Length: 267
Image 1: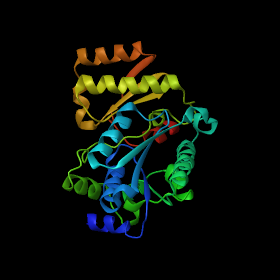
Image 2: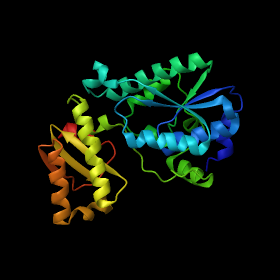
Image 3: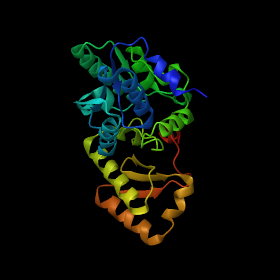
Image 4: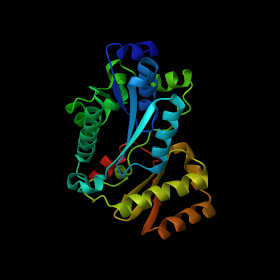
C-alpha cells in the first residue's frame, strides 16, 4: 500500500506549493502533507465559485484550521461563464479550466510555481473532463502520481488524525442537473436546501437531489433507503421540497450512484 512517506517525499524538490483545497478528504491529505513538509511555504486555497455548497466551504475552512495551513478563499461566479451555464457534457472541463486560471493568477501573485490538487487513482475510472482541464493547465496531482487509491487516502488520513477521514465524497451542486439543462442560481439554491432538509430529517451524510426539469429525484445510499419508507417522514420531505420550488418529488429506488446523470441522459 502506498505510504505517507511516499507522499511527503513527493514534496522534496518543491520550494513553495499552492494546494487546491475542496473540503474533501483527498485534498485535505495533500494539504496535510504539504504543510508537514513545507510549513509556511504551503498555502491552501478554496474557490467559492457559487456552485460549491456552503457545507463544503465550511468543511474546507475547518480542515485547513485543523491542519494549521495558511488558507485563502478566492471568489468568482461560474454562473457568469456561458460555457459552464449551458451545461453540456464538458461542463466540468469549463469549471476546472476557469478554476485553473484563477489558481494560476493567485500562484503568480505569490511567486509559487507548483499548484496541486487532490485527484487520486480511483478518480481516473470515471468520465472526468475536469481532471483533463486541470492537468492541461499544469496542475499537479501528488496522490495520483504516487498511486494513492481512495482506500489509501482514508486510511492515511485516519492515521494522521484528520477528522474528515471518513467524509463522504461530494461534488459541486451543478452536478445534480442533467447535461443539456441550464444551470441557474435558483436551481442550485433549491438543490442545496433540499439536501440539507433530507440530511437533517433522516440523519444521513450522503444525499443527492437531482433536479430534472423541476422534478426532484432523491438519492441516498442503498442501505439507507428504508429510512424513507415511513409515510409521515416521506410526506414531510416531499412537502418541504415542493415548497421550495420543485414541481414533483420521487425517490430513486436504485439508491445513490456516482455519475448517475450520465445514465439520466441516456434514458
